Amino acid sequence: VANTPISSCPTPIQPHIMTSTKPRLAFLGGTFDPVHRGHIEPLITLADTFQWQQVHLLPTCQPPHRAQPEATNAQRLAMLEAVAARDPRLLVNDWEIRQGKPSRTHSTLSYFRDAYPDHALYFVMGMDSWVTLHTWLQWQELNQHADLVILPRPGYHASQAAPEVTQWMHQQSNIHFPQLTETNVSATALRQQLQLWQSGQPAPSNLFPETFSYIQSQKLYR
Ligand code: ATP
Image 1 (cartoon, rainbow, N blue to C red):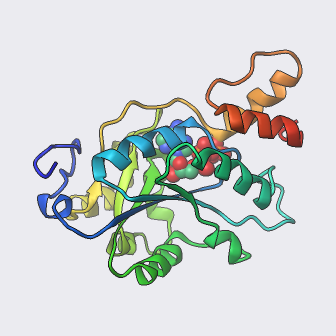
Image 2 (image 1 turned 45 degrees about the vertical axis):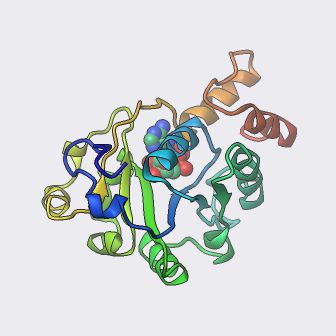
């Protein structure tokens, strides 16, 4: 694996990272309202590529008085737990939800860096998140806590990132842009499709069956 080129331009994976003997943990933060194939399928592929022992699905905490997400913290956790049963490396991590208020990625990664001192950490985000990175708190420090892994996403390209992010990225050795098949799905589109499904349109195809069953049983997204 050490010499296999798994990242595309702009930053190849450094051999010293791939030959490290530390156990490797990855995190995907998100609203997961609801979880869908665009979240999970790339993670399973990348868990093989990067040899991740665990992949933590890390739902954001949503205070009850906020309108979005539509599903409660408990419902989003339940949907994630069902999907995590698909692969033994997938785990649901409720740390941000237990904080009781929305968390900043910088604080979350700083916490996990301290919590897992003997592990190599990877933080995964979609390209839509990457192109807004300059708006994130302490964004230049994120990769001091974890390698960053950016998933391709239809409609978004690394060239849309702010110039200061692009310039910074070229100086880093632990930001990865793996080549993957893009999955054209978003939770927003799925929520709209689920409403249309109520009025007789076809059911959305990018939900896992267990998620679709749960949504029906809980009468979500109507
Ligand atoms: P919404 O449409 O409500 O914004 P979403 O589908 O983007 O939701 P989130 O829970 O906000 O889902 O996403 C969590 C993380 O997964 C983010 O880093 C996001 O960029 C990434 N992600 C979500 N969908 C995809 C996808 N289809 N391809 C690649 N990355 C994705």
